[in-house]
Image 1 (tube, rainbow, N blue to C red):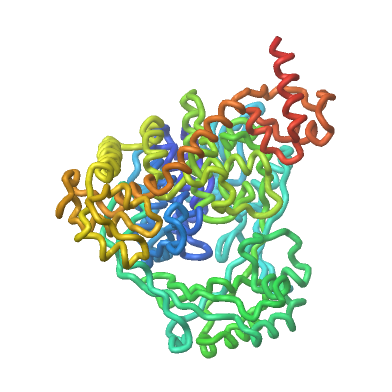
Image 2: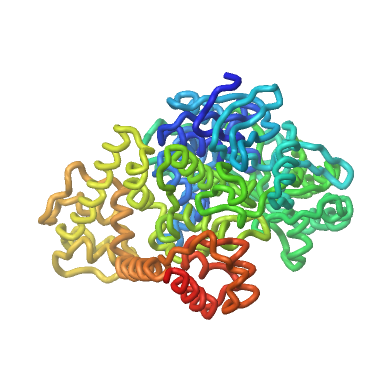
Length: 631
């Protein structure tokens, strides 16, 4: 394959790289994925779990766009839970524990079975250029591949270094894998701004040495929920998680050894994720806390190893063993792998266009942790967007940039390129101003038609999409046509603390009550039977379709307001800004606004409005400057 030409080359086989390669190949261009170790594509390097608050919605968005994360998660899940069930269904969050090794093997099978995608195992040393534009890559083994579109998804490998305690440092992108040094040096020499972040991982323990009598068991949900809209494979045997605590004894050990931590001993100066702190950070920052919760999570079906979630650390191995021995249930547990911190290069994302293409190096797209994010799901979201845009660029077609009211993927990308990062970026529902529109249940409705337009779906997937959207619409219509009789539902209504009915009542009206579940209501009336004058649609709506209809009913008024607000903001902010605007010369703007606009170079007035430091008067004057130049 040496010397072969491709339309798109993807560097790195993590979650961003896999989704980028899949998206580019599905769009219809010849794609090459180059990674240092094919047996570890999409490795769950830290927690073997996918999803969570906001993140679970992102997985469903990636799936709606034809991506692989949801499909592979469903095939390898050993526990599923819907988080936030005690809150409104609009913020429910799916999360799965996965079999770590099976996840990677399953992803590789999917990659190898995709037409138009080639895989190659090597480390990319450098990019090749033709003038100022990317022209290909050079690998450590001497192989060269030509392409005018390259997607860089190197994760934590760029000059990566692992720290265990203050004295053990290993050059590595993750445990067991060498870093990518030359590529980082080349990009820095070409003028890209580079800085450092750090992240960490906890120790693992042998589950056979855990005293399960002293920990709390946590089972998954019994419902067979799926992340993917496209597949319904057989579910694997399910495994429990376990809950315990870091208490005062462990905290005393940590406090007494803080100077031996890589972070607190001075070996690491880079900033880490505030929302996923090390146990040292927790002890220092929250001294009043009596204890810190720990989750023991299964690594897979073919191993007894457990992931000690909540105990991320860079303390020396001997201190880690002492800390573990002071945790209830882990007094005699055997550590199978120590936790460690890893420090790595990233490129501040203000250097990117909203397409995730480098402003300085045309043809180079970036996705994942190289853009300053943390998390598998954030990486996959960027990967699929970068892959789509690199492929469409190769085809000479318009890019795809999702709006903030269209997808969490749009929120993520806009936050990165507009606001930048000063700590590893993690998605939260609070980052989205239109989160009622961006629910996990309606991801297919939002993005499925767009995926079809972009050419990301097979013919069979297009048919599945049509049937699914039709059945969801039929389920919602049925709720307005069907009615419930008092004798069928009053006992249920009273058990939920809501008033009974004295005559046949619309199912939609009952489902709007906060206390009522449409799924349970439909079960009580036999989905169209027992006095309901309107029969259920054929086939009968599934629980998932009913749940989606319920959210549309319960939040209809709020959703209409959000859609109107989103449309109003879209119209107000649609003014296009030329990439050539001489911001530093616009004296009518404040000095801070001129500097930040020149640095970020927003594409629309709406994007400019989201830049910290650009005030209302700056925006008004900017509009005047643009219109003056337009004549």
